[in-house]
Amino acid sequence: MKKLVLFLFCILIIGSCTVPRDPGKPNVLLILSDDQGSIDLNCYGATDLQTPNLDKLATGGVRFTQFYAAASVCSPSRAALLTGKTNLKAGLPGNVPIPEYQEEGQKAGLPANQITIAEMLKENEYSTALVGKWHLGHSPEQLPNSQGFDHFFGHERGCIDNYSHFFYWKGPNKHDLHRNGEEVYYPGRNFGDLMVEEILDLLNKKQEKPFFIYWAFNAPHYPYQGTVEWQDYYKNHPYPRNLYAAFVSSMDERIGIVLNELDKLGLSDNTIVIFQSDQGHSTEERAHWGGGNAGPYRGCKFSFFEGGIRVPAIIRYPGVIPQNEVREQVTSEMDWLPTIAELTGSEILDKGIEGKSLMPVIEDPGEKSQHEVLHWQQGDYSNKSPWAVREGDWKLLGNPEDRSTDQKFTGEDTLFLVYLKEDVSEKANLSGKYPEEVQRLKALHYEWLGRIKKERKKK
Image (cartoon, rainbow, N blue to C red; front, side, top):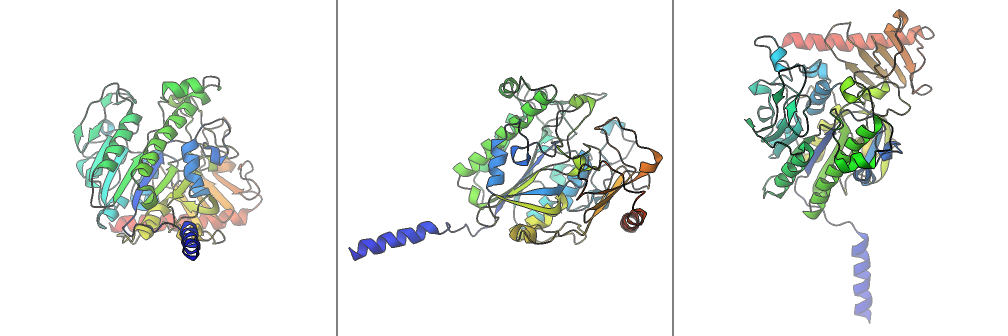
């Protein structure tokens, strides 16, 4: 009888403990959605979408409510993500132009000397892969296989048709699907399905090294091409929300397939999964003038109002990251590089990064934000480009833009001051009421911009 009691006691103790973790380096799956609205997940407030897989990811980890994209358009945001720097410091002020429209010898894009997350992890004996959208340059030294990725499958330009895999813009229309420098053809196959197949193949290959997979979705960026099943599900939603919603749920479903595969292979407990959108939703003509939802936030893609840069962001790492928790501190996509470095024991190769590890905030909900000030600017390095600076709850926008409304900015709005704690919708310009705050924040911005320009001249 005593032996039975002792046995049951041991079972009870073992059952109450966490399963011992794999002592090896964790894998990393970094998922980036494209043009997704600030609240367009159920866990962020959407009530008219089905996103069960990303909601489950949030339940299993930490989600952030004041997480900022480092830019409000695709290429600069991706540059910041991969380098841990603002896009200006990374050397990419604006979207990468179409190669056919660049000047002879121009190599617009992320400079080849910038060090990416992939290059950092390769130095730590990781296998590295990019599946999806690149949009960071077209010269050989700027393509993924030259920027730290052992494997690349996807498109080099900003968007493709998901069935023909052609880039349609203003001509020449061009087939844009590649695997490791070779053009590949899958006519009629849905690109979302092809990405899933590619990732499942990578996961099922016997590898001695831990993996880093950067899954750069092209959804819900236009063209809106959700599966027929999801289009039918949302058929009673108003246009164009119905088209956008179908694409979001198609993306969520595919993410679920990959997350389930991690479970099946026994990899989930030793895999860091990160998700965020690259910026706010699009209101461009090709996006049917909208479809996404920024909720209470003003603005959209291209704008430094909150709806253009405040994005959903989640991290899960069982046994290390708390489960089903929310962090309200100000955070940035530049922070993923140092966070990944800390969690994987990798050396940060470029000491000039501007991101901060999120671990202090993740481990302690009462910890203050690791950023006293955040800066944004895109377009070019001049004083005429749109820019913004946030310190505490004060935010100043210079040369603001907002394509989500027909409202015209006047000369007085060239400097647009908001106090987010009382006006998260950024309706009122307080620059006339608080000129001292305008001057203080403006000085912060110009000091930062001057420092960036000075560093550029040295190179």
